[in-house]
Image (cartoon, rainbow over all chains, first blue to last red; front, top):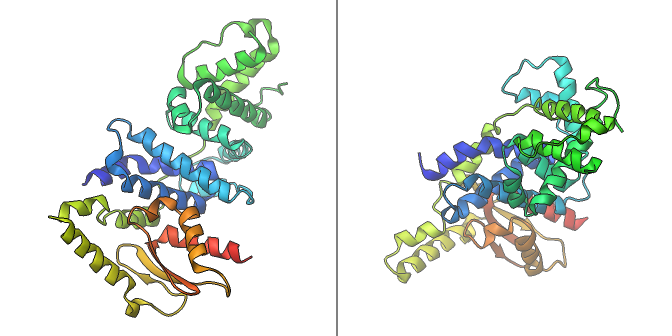
Length: 168
Length: 177
């Protein structure tokens, strides 16, 4: 297996899931996924060993920003939980969890773009705040604030479902 | 500590275990309740399932990435004459007139690249459209030896990977509206 094949095998799944959640659209995610890896392949020799994940996610974030700027007119479409379930590692998702997934996706969809970028990096992809800030090209405190605001919005969206009463 | 600062610390603590949120919650029942919700929402977000990319998406991409990179070509040449010869042969193969297929149909290479011809609306400047495409559709691929374009009178012929061809079709469709 070549270097790039190994790199692809290691990062394809997380980048795919990141782009799918970020765009809420499988077709757009597929396009961005291919463009991101194509760019990574083109510039593969310039990567810094040990920082490949952050390097690749930076490419993916920038590709997504470019694409979203071009498509600003189009509303973001939510991936249906049925689609997600079809591709899930655990296909036995009970109906109540499916409803929860729907609510979470609705919450993620409602986030402003920069909050969504950072929240996904930190919540799903194991980036520290400092790493996520570097990937998104923002300062550390701005990254923390963006993730906290995103989280707060998600709390509000989910508060009814979490059976903990409403919050102010 | 303000409520906003406390709530931000709750998130940071949930995300990376650092920065204990502090005892603001003991004096502020609303924030104490928020901390419970925040924990539950953080965990609930983990319920969103994960999955692999569709095989066709990965396979198309990997086929494309098995081509030699532009930078790899330097390994083949003993000198600039050899490089020029390689480029000349590539140009002939790419733009040989006999290769043009029926209008609107693509000539697929086995490795996922295709050559497509795009007819432009009457009066459109092919050079200007080509420049817009290079700037707006996968700009990183044009200078890297991945995508290439030939400009004619009223038409463009493009060799590029499938996602770039799709981008060009979308671009031209939107441009014509």
